[in-house]
Length: 106
Image (cartoon, rainbow, N blue to C red; front, side):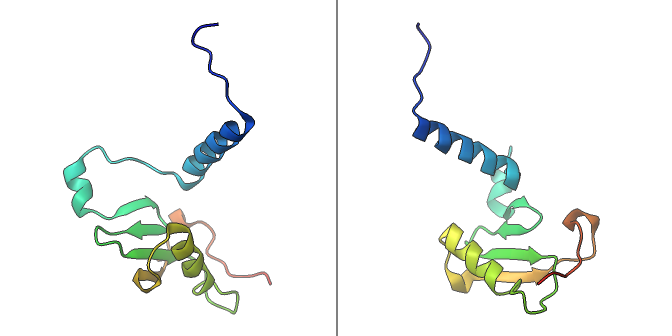
């Protein structure tokens, strides 16, 4: 049958994981390349990467021993293969777009 492509299970899993990650993180592509060169890349409200490669994470939780301000930057730096010294963290302002800003659990 012309036009039909055989897809292995491994390729299907890779494709599904990539599509799922794009939906979860809400990745968008800039329309204007000139504007994107000066503005930081911000795939969502929690992550920002500037043109120089500095990563800023916005955390909507308080630090009460859960490691929100230590573990999260470590994980992000590892996943992005970013320089640990270039990863910063900031507290989220009170805003609905960050969802529930309560800190709890154990």
